[in-house]
Length: 136
Image 1: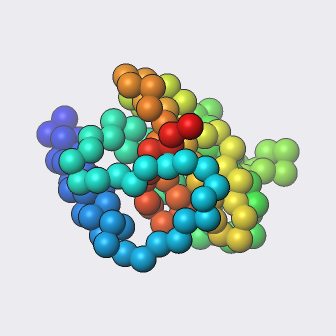
Image 2 (image 1 turned 60 degrees about the vertical axis):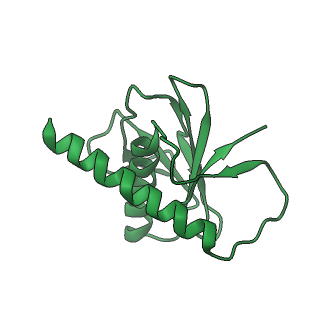
Image 3 (image 1 turned 180 degrees about the vertical axis):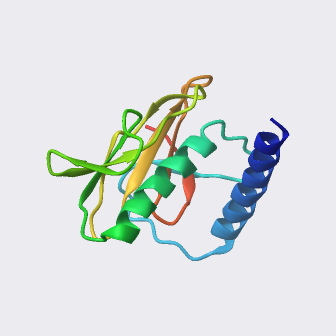
C-alpha cells in the first residue's frame, strides 16, 4: 500500500512539474475546442487513469507505429488483435466514471479523455503527456 502512495506522490510531482513546464513552453492553439491548462496546484483524481491509458497506447505504437486506432479494454491480459484493432489491456480505477475506450491516432497524435467519478470534470491527456481540463 505504501508503494502505491509513493507512486501516486511521485506521479503528482511529475504532473506538477510537467504542468509548470507546459505553462512556460511555447504552444499553439488552433481555437478548436475548449480546454484549460493544468496548473501546479490542481489535484487530478483521474491522472493515474490518463497516464495508464496513454502508456498502453504508447506501448502499442512502440511495437507498430502504423496503428490508427487502439482499443483499451479490461477483458484482455495482453495485447490482442480483434476486428482489425489492437486491443491493449487497461482497467480504469474507481476514480474514473469513464475513460476513452477507442483511441483514434492521426499522424502519431491522439487524445484520451477521462471523467472524474467524484467531480464530473473531464480531463484529457495527449500523446506528449500534457493533461488539460476539457470545458464545454
